[in-house]
Amino acid sequence: MKMKTTTILELMTADHTKILKLLHDVEKSIGIELVSLMKVFDTFEWELEKHIFTEEKAIFSSYNPKNILEGYKMVPELVQQHNEILNKIRIMRKDLMWNKTVKFHEFKEFIMAHKTFEEASLYPKLDQELTTGQKEEIIKKIREIV
Image (cartoon, helix red, strand yellow):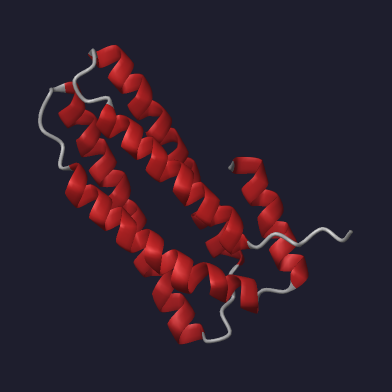
C-alpha cells in the first residue's frame, strides 16, 4: 500500500489544533497556583513560538510565489500578524504573573482569524504551487521543529 504524501496543510493544521488545545489548558488553569499556571503557559508559548518560527524560517523562506504581487503581499501581512501574536503573548505572560485579567476571548478571535486564513489560503496555495522537491524539503524542516 502506497503511503499518502503528507501535505503542508495537514501538518500545520495539526499543529494549529495542538496550539489551540494548549491555549485552552492555560485558560482552564487560571486560578491554580502561579508556578503551575506558568508551567502550563510556558508549554503553550513554546509550541506557539516554534510554530511561528517554522512558518517564517521553513515555509516563507522557500516560497517563490507564481503570482509575485499576491504572494509577497501575503507574507509580510502574515509576519506582521505573527509579531502581533508574539507581542500579545508577552503581555499575557505579564498579566498572568501579576494576576491581572487576561482577555482570552480577544486573543482567541485574533488567533482564529489568522489560523483560518493560513488554512484556507496559504497552506493550500503552497501545496499547489511548490514542486515535490520543495515540499519535501519544507516538510522535513517542519518535522524537525514541530
